[in-house]
Length: 77
Image (cartoon, rainbow, N blue to C red):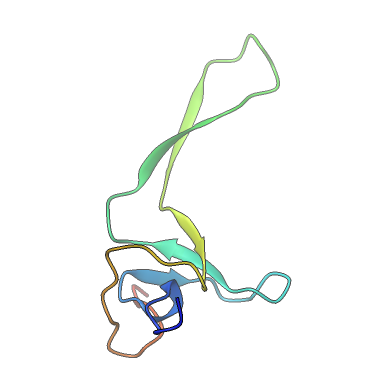
């Protein structure tokens, strides 16, 4: 996509503070956090899961883009 409807310009996206290997990543806050199972090394350990927002790169896109007021994702701080 070349029309600017990428995660970095979306009102649902919260960017991380620093890029990783030249790419800015962030969390998509369009829907509630997902419950993600965590693999544990010890087979006897109780299963564990964490809740987290989907993690995306700044150049990714989906069908639910919403322009942000600032042009740089949401600000929940």
